[in-house]
Length: 132
Length: 137
Image (tube, rainbow over all chains, first blue to last red; front, side, top):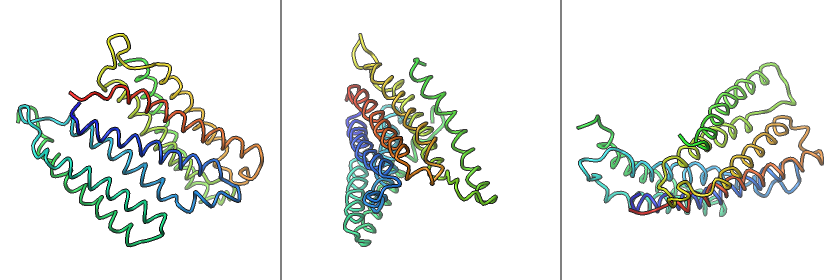
């Protein structure tokens, strides 16, 4: 697999384990008085699982297996930027959850938006019929 | 397809049906005012863990680069642990979570604790096995 796929997959595994651990804590404290602690920050579980794990894993594998133009992956220079914006956005967004700072969360989500736009720009021409 | 791919993918398809069925039951419970039946969160997790995650695990196990010639797909014992733990966790969750009056009972807390540890162990076993197979070419 390409180096950037490996980077995306390893990063996605980190979020899967961390976000999964938070979710496990939420489930384990369900119905208990201390259940409020993890539940207050449940956005961190949701965003790490949906964006940190699922989206990041899919983008990494997509970069690897989508059709290529002869041997080249067009616009692959965008892929490090996508990773930086996605992970930077996630860290800021999660920081915003714990700091209860909506401004930080907004900046984080704008980072995720920029990452999604750039990945779409990368992947768009690679969705093509055989031989094109 | 290898055995664990077939196992994870077929199981994931069953969860897709169960999750959507439970989603419909959520609406029915609301319509019929079954106040002590609230399966929405369980349906979401059956969908995302049971269906989406297990489908990904099955396909990744099949498609990732080979580990070694002797163990092309890594350690099958880890995949068995992943499958058993994830599904035990999901089934336990399904048994307790949809009925909120259960939650405060001591036995339910034990079930939630076992379910949460089991699901996380299932994730860990998958991550360890697939991490061995990440190879840059």
